[in-house]
Length: 80
Length: 282
Image 1 (spheres, chains in turn purple, red):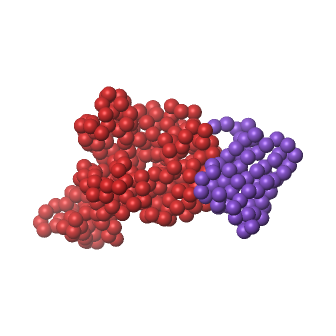
Image 2 (spheres, rainbow over the protein chains, first blue to last red):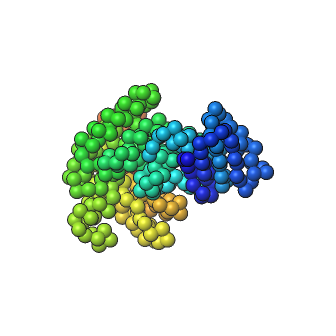
Image 3 (tube, rainbow over the protein chains, first blue to last red):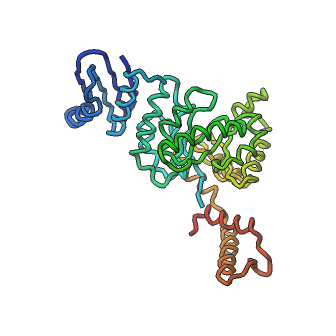
């Protein structure tokens, strides 16, 4: 399992775990932004066979993409 | 003339602060990958900073990134991730011309690979060795300014930073080293963000010491520093006359600039231009 991001305002926490492909979106604003977030997650992680959980704290699109890239690269073995 | 009166430090792993960094009118914004980013967040921070540089509008602020120092395993990775998108690389604990050459070699490699122009560097002098070699460091063609920090330096001397009398001498050394090479000199931050009067005095003093700017930790400090760096009306008036005389001499094809029977030397003209730039007069 790898993680990226924080639980601060305006951020997103991304968790990627081994397993069949599944996307879980948690957001206080899920009704408004849930679909848009899911689309971005689908696009950035396309083809990845893993469970991807995102906890949104009001992140903008560029933040979501940055946190997803960080998590993906960690999942593929890159380190600090 | 490029102004660097204020450089606002923003923790590189905080999207909320990064997003708003361009709103406050600082001359420079520093997205920090060093001290404000804890170990364990360095990887996430450099990717977040890369995305912010590509997506956030930093307004008229020059875009800086403070990378980690050359004695860490992070600085090369920092550069590879963000160099393409920055105006200036701010590098802590530079101690020698060899350090600059080491940095330069990696930057050159990345610039070639990405097909981008040469990026500028502002080294931070933080040690006695760095201070001893400050002129050599300032001489490097990438360097546009010298900045400094007193924490390590006073620790080396075994004295508390707040009581360290030697820091006035260090300030003077930084200014002389930078200016002797035609570079800017940038003073360190005033850390009491609630003390507005103290900050004004600090920035005023920095200006008369010969510094071109100071670091700021909070957006509220920006306007105060800009005000402190604004020259007095009589300074502006004198500067305006000198610049006008220079323009007149140029128009009339005269090699010598004269004002009220007095010859104006190049450094005096440069000072006048700088005063007008600080006054934000076109």
